[in-house]
Length: 173
Ligand code: SF4
Ligand code: SF4
Image 1 (cartoon, protein in one colour):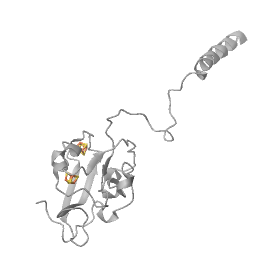
Image 2: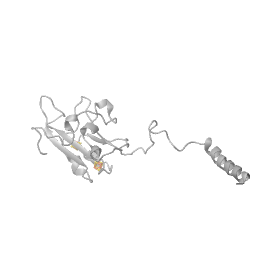
Image 3: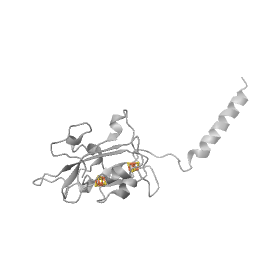
Image 4: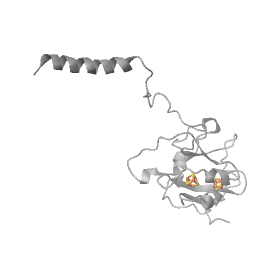
């Protein structure tokens, strides 16, 4: 082994290291720093509420009809007049989006008459099973109107996917 060749190789390697040591880094400290994305980036959905806490979704299914990927399942139910879930007669009892089908086109957002379903800048969607990537209201519904864009709460457990419908739940009008 020629020691001069070894030294030359080391110096060439160090030259590359020194060249990039003081330049601007192209990597980011994710997840401590947010990933930069386009202003109109469409990511994970959230179901919003009004400021009084009532859900905006009225279970009309327009978003499900508009979805080109057939990713949305909505089952509406009659509101209990004494304890309404949303303004009006009906609310979205079951609301699910299959994130593995979704192509993030935003048509559901466009179709919604109450601005209930919106796409947020969130993009971290990884999980370990297909079932966990079918998002129900437990993950989509914001906990309160002041935490919008911070979905993935643990509320509304009674609407977990697969749970039986309540007696008042009916087919869409
Ligand atoms: S973003 Fe597009 S594909 Fe995804 S649920 Fe909405 S309408 Fe369907
Ligand atoms: S999210 Fe909007 S379009 Fe979809 S069922 Fe609810 S109110 Fe209707």
